Length: 109
Image (cartoon, rainbow, N blue to C red; front, side, top):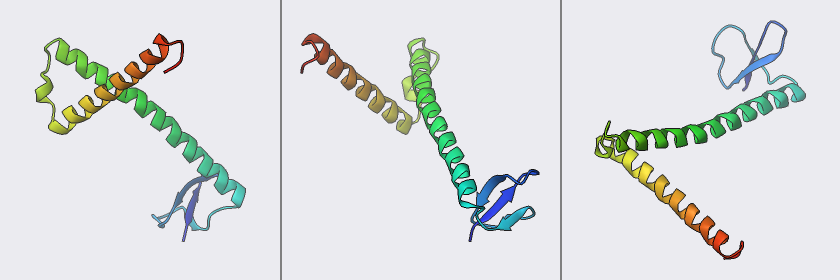
């Protein structure tokens, strides 16, 4: 069963598989209303994903700067974080090498 919650104007503001208390009603709203709600959620999720990608690069650069300036040691980071940072650094280097091969031969590998 699906439960929905509406705002004061009757617009769908939440969908849940459980009735979490007051304000929830049984049903999924009309098809168009539910589709719009799902589209808003998908768009928000996509925006968060893009933001996370950008933020992760910012954090990588910040960590590299702190290590370069001696504020922290790379070995101070947890092993899992060090491994992930090294994997991403290696992946970026591979992409740069691939791009430089394209540039050297007039866009031909």
